[in-house]
Image (cartoon, rainbow, N blue to C red):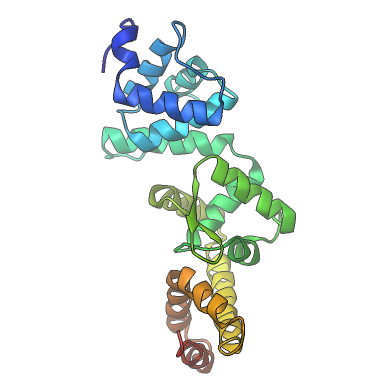
Length: 253
C-alpha cells in the first residue's frame, strides 16, 4: 500500500477505496481529502488490509475522524492485547472487534454476546424472545438489534415471508467468548432451547389451515436453530418424551 504522503496512490488503493465507500455509507458527508487520506491509508496498513476490519472501522466515521480512529488503534494502552500466537491479520481483526465492542452501548454489548447462541438466520421475534430479558426488554432489545444491524455486526437476510438476520461468523465467535466470560451461556442455551421447542409446537398447530405456508416458511428460516435446540435437548436428556413430541411435530416439515 502506498505511504501516506502519496495521496494519489493511496486514494486508488483497494483498501482505502473500501474504507471510503463504507465511511460514506455510514456518513454521507465523508470523502477522501488532502487532510485525511494519509490517516485512512495508515489505518488500512495497520489493519493489514483485512476487509472486515476496514468495514467495521469505517463505521466509526459517524463519530470519529480518520485520524482519531487511527490514533485509537495506535494507543496500545487503551486496547486489550490480541490472542497470543495469532497471525497479524487475526490480531488486527481482534483489535477491531475489541474496540468496536467498547464503542457499543451496554445493551448492544449484551445483545451481541447473547445472539452468539443462535445458528441463524433468525427473526427479530426469536431474538426478543430468547435473548430479551434482564437489562434487555421489548423495545430496548429491538433498538439494540437495529443498532447492531446499522453497525454491520448483524446482517439482514431475506427469508421470503419476513426479514431475518444473522451474525457474521467472526462476530459470532467474538460474541460467544464474551458470553462465556459473562457466565450467561448456560441460561441462554436453555432459553434458546425452550423458545425453539415451543416454536416447533406452534408450527405444528398450524399444519393445516390458511397459515400453513407461513409456518412452513418460518420453520425453514430458523431450521438451523431448531436443530440446535433439539441437539441441546438430547444432550441434556432432562425430558426425553418432550424431545420425541417435538421431533414428531416436525413430520410435515
